[in-house]
Amino acid sequence: MLITFDTLAIEADSALQAKVKETALAQGINFYYAPGHIQISIDETTSLNDVAQLVALFAGLKGAQSAFKKDEPKHFQIPTALQRESAYLTHSVFHNFHTESKMMRYIKRLENRDLSLTLSMIPLGSCTMKLNAASELLPVSWPEFADIHPFAPFEQVQGYRQIFTELEAYLCEITGFTGCSLQPNSGAQGEYAGLLTIKAYHESRGDNHRNIALIPSSAHGTNPASAVMAGLEVVVVNCDDHGNIDVADLRAKAEQYRDNLSALMVTYPSTHGVFEVHINEICDIIHQNGGKVYMDGANMNAQVGLTSPAAIGADVCHLNLHKTFAIPHGGGGPGVGPICVNDSLKPFLPKHPLVETGGSQGIKAVSAAPWGSASILLISYAYIKMLGKTGVTDATKYAILNANYIKARLSEAYHVLYVGDMGRSAHELIVDLRPFKDFVSAEDVAKRLMDYGFHAPTLSFPVAGTIMIEPTESESKDELDRFCDALLADPPGDR
Ligand SMILES: *Cc1c(COP(=O)(O)O)cnc(C)c1O
Image (cartoon, rainbow, N blue to C red; front, side, top):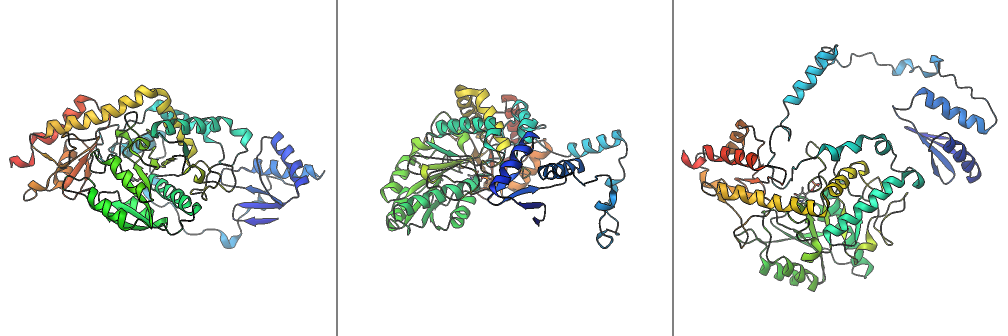
């Protein structure tokens, strides 16, 4: 027997494993069965009763009586040399709240200091802070979903499997693609996984040398970071004065690097909040020069039901389920960044060393669990299932309408930095505050909004001296008006 930290490895040939498995399953216990041994992990939730049950199980298989006495404390004493003598938890918060009422008030006081969606709109652009409906969140805490181990035997997780399959199908329909991996835990991890599938595709054709990633200067910082992680070399493509990709520069660079081009990473609608009219041409240029198109899907809230990554000519995209598909985010909570791919990249979707998933020539796993943060997939599943095709499309339309309503109301006092050919924004807009910089900075405006009870918009990203506003479909007209009224009550230009 081998002990590593919290895990015991007990030598057992396959015959013994079969016997243990049969007895354990009958008692509702899963072990991990590896070639030559059985693994058992213990943590702080394991009780002495659990330990007694495990010892009895193994003793019983040997026809022996368990000698384990769980109430004999001397077995469990921490050796004197390891016993702590210094004081701990000395801060007053650990000693001040000894009645439930005091504890309740303390927790409520902390909660009151938080500015969340329960208080006001969070208009952060490039983030999609939309409603996280209680009905979508409820199932996450049900023990039937919450207490399942990622490596639980196949037969025990049929419900989860069904949800994975249906959700993958929905995401494929939404993106227009044919394959999906729910494994990546964030948008950035999706970018990494997607670029690796592109790399594997090139290598499967003997194109091992294709290592150039073209990335527009407007891209989110994760794009070049993921490209470098995936072993690619980044070449930056310029944007024009309107914030659009400079197509001539893109064409020149795609042709210059045509022998080594791996991929373009493009965000649509762009991080400037605009639907690029040349997007199809942009994707064509990349394909003509032997590359694949990775679409950053963080702005899918402006696409769902109206257009799709496949329709614009991309080959792979990630979706931020914690943006477009209603999983709460912010504060470092868990995310999900699945990737969807077309037929050409499907064979390369990530596999997993312990569980069968992914493509026939799949890349290595990009996360520890085969389906990533599986329990919170329930939220996106519920969001799509409850809204249906019409509902998710309406969400997109309202998101775009709300952004353009704000744009129209603010335009009397502010300049919106980038708009499309029709003079419209996508689902978010960048308000330029640089004209006022001599007396009021973008930071001042962000702080002043807090006086009106609003969370600040995204500050100085992707353009310094601006704020980026994304209202989402979740906000009603009166809340949008309250927000516009605040910005118009004392516009910086009036001083
Ligand atoms: C949020 C975002 C990302 C990164 O996604 P994470 O889930 O935060 O890793 C990438 N690109 C764009 C445009 C984004 O807005």
